[in-house]
Amino acid sequence: MTDAMIVSARYVVDESLKDLRTAIEGLPGAALDWRPGGLPAGQAGAETNSVAVLATHVLHSTRWWLSVALGTPLPDRDRESEFRAAASDAAALLDLVDALSEDCRRLLGSVQEVDWAALRPVGGDPREAPAAFALLHAAGHLREHVGHIALTRQLWESRPEP
Image (tube, rainbow, N blue to C red):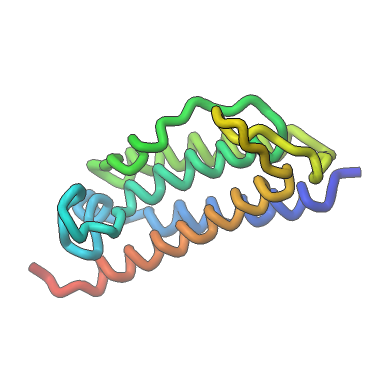
């Protein structure tokens, strides 16, 4: 019998990934790199992130935290580069969404039971986290950034035309 946490995580992650895809579909290239604050990345006061940055970051993060939760090998990840991501068109960004979404679904489909109390190494440092924390963090962080992306899209669509 499949662990109820795994079944629940599959549902939440799958729905979130579908919502992520929906929030990106049809956006013009300019919207993907637009920051709601209007300031370019690296400039003082530019604390907001673009759709391309948020999507890239949350996909890599979700795959990484799911790997922690499930005790599978950690994927290569350059977290800093995620915050420099740019996208020329929605199709290119959706290719990344589809590829990493499939990785996340495959990870969740690869296990039936997990010891949720098991301590897992968190990257290259000596810290550890319970598997349950890693799973909840993966799902919650994904949901949070999908909401950010949806809100960024709404702001883009409601902005005054230049």
